[in-house]
Length: 380
Image (cartoon, rainbow, N blue to C red; front, side, top):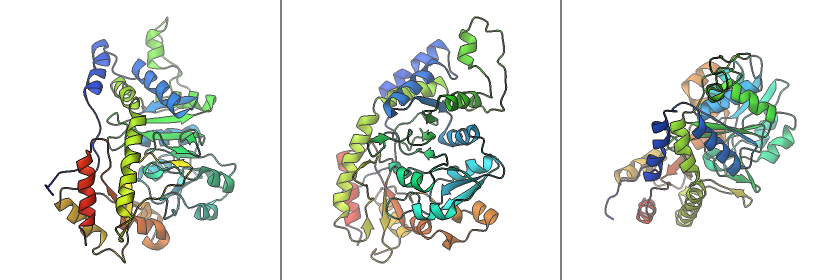
């Protein structure tokens, strides 16, 4: 094989995105304005929700969702242990306590059994993560916690579906990311979705310092010299119109992005069937995986080398890989602060040590995918 260089993820951007930036640059509206509203409206339409509120990141989306529900000191919020650290950090930002729950080995998503054990009278919210683009089992979560608000961490899951319904409308709020490793990107950026009209209004106010009207409303209103009233302690979590312009173009490609990723995920599945030391991700029949990442598990007993050595060998062939994500309870801040041991969440620990994401993104060519497949076959 001729050596190639294949990144773990590359944003799919081109002339359309470049051209889209002309409008906010030429009209001078660079902060949150008409392009952000267009992006929000399109995102809500695609994901079949009543409201979409654009923010600066999925982290601020999650923080905003918790703040809008009044989560604070003395409250507990349940979070899976195997996820990006922001999912737990936002709970601490509110002064509440993140209660970690183990994951299911097959889906990488929250364990329903461990969740049921961790519920207390202090549990005020649950953050199910749709990890790598696969929805958590929302019905099962609701069955064991019927009266607790569910905030979907859908950072990886734009375009994903659960039993025919788009994620983002399955809980009280959904929180999305537009980081460059996601299928749809605005550089940085996030979105909060909800079907609750009152909650949506509160989210919009909180993202704009707590102002009772937006900057766009004030500047276009009959009395632009009047400053807004501030009745709530809010944040500056506004997305820019430059990002909104990018987002509108990117969203127009979401369906094709996800479709192409599904096709190549199926190709990887067929390849991995014949490799005994690696396990492909599982997808229930009534779920639509958005394939933000293709995350495998390296079988420690069958593999010819440990996971990290395999990743080094692939890198020597020009193929970038990553661990799926990390086990929060094994990170120094959380183990030091809360006294966790590595063995406290065994499935999360195994996923931390043995998961391996291989390249899957919309800038890869057919030859790239076959190159990765051949490199995996050659590890013996």
